[in-house]
Image (cartoon, rainbow, N blue to C red; front, side, top):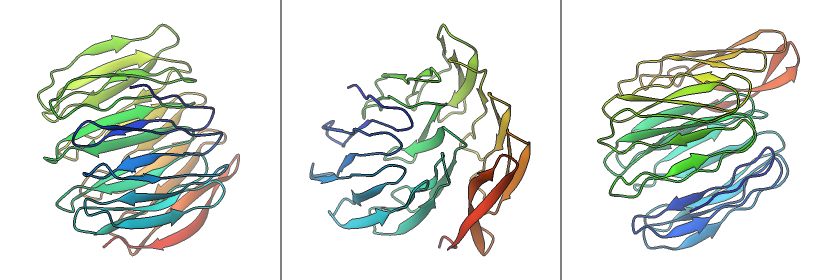
Length: 274
């Protein structure tokens, strides 16, 4: 299946447990998508410029509605027991958590113009996906672990997602020298090289060992949260800003927005994840 995205947005498809597909299309600066529940029922998501409004079905068909304003995303995702987790993002990036079927959390953090995230399969195994500036077009593994190829536009990332038994593999593209690493569930890495502006990503493995991310166009560095809730620091270009993000072990954590070329502004605090 093919996903196509525009400038500043994401277009993708998600497989349900039977392999049925639903199509996602997004416009400039936003995301529009549908998600299937286990019975194949669909819910439609529509977003405006710079914001997202959507619903996600749990396995029983219950819905939760999320609305966000310009420049940021706020949403909740239901697990199969109806437990909720809250997600907040800043201008140009997404920060979110996804619950597995047992309620365990995995943390996803991204910087300006890109997304970094992990997806749990039904057994709790993780597969990691990363994209740079521009957009993402990708495919997801089927339940038998068959591989598909992922390609994105501006920023030029091409990658594959490993199945649960996957060994390391190398793949590359012609332009530039973007480099990042994807871990399979056994911790075996695979390196990807492609795209513009010399971006390097280091991702968390499933044991929660943190690594650093270094991004091009002025050297953006991200330290990701590990699964134990250890804090992360962002060092961003255009003035070398350092913004410590508070962890879930603190009373609150913040949603950071680029306020100027030399500073971050905390938009709001959200209540601690239970």
